[in-house]
Length: 74
Image (spheres, rainbow, N blue to C red):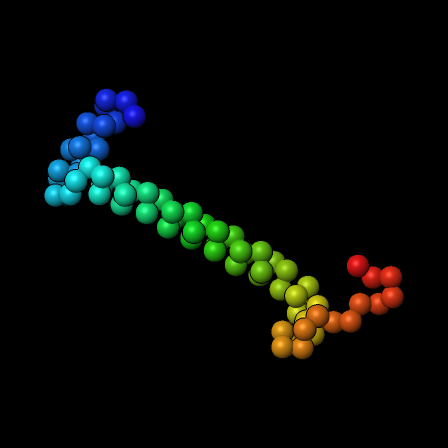
């Protein structure tokens, strides 16, 4: 980490009343949380786009399991 970044981290940590390590830990946790939300949003979008395919595959009832495949099917 360059000195300017380190100094900025020290100032921010001091402003928050936490150690530099704790401040960096909070930044990492926030970053991981944002990544997780991005993944969940993308997965939800995917499911919405292919909702009809899933409904057909599971005949509208996931408890029934996959629909039987025709001979020679995937």
